Image (cartoon, rainbow, N blue to C red):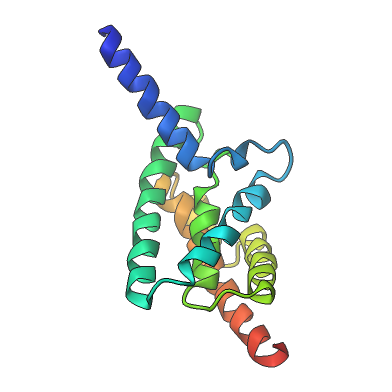
Length: 161
């Protein structure tokens, strides 16, 4: 391997690990998934200003980025769902808050509901987590948690806000 190849490989690895850890939040010494989800709050703030088609395209781009980055990072770490990989929490949270106007009640309740469902992993999230040991499985359990959290978030917002 030439020096240029090793530098390129080093840069690729750094980029993948930076993206998969939501800019380093996944390296938190405790509760990296919770810290990783925090990246979703400013992302929700900015996405809420997008038109719904642009929001949808952005969510799809982040979803497919998460599939790829989670898979490659899992290979680098030697574990498909390494705790430092938290880009899946970002897409899960953004699904929770998708197409809502930004408000602090929505941001905080969405965060709480998403973390509850991400930790509990009700079916089929637990199947994705258990059976698909790749970037798709790592991401899809959080997508399911995001869908469940989105439903409860909208019910709470209707009832209480």
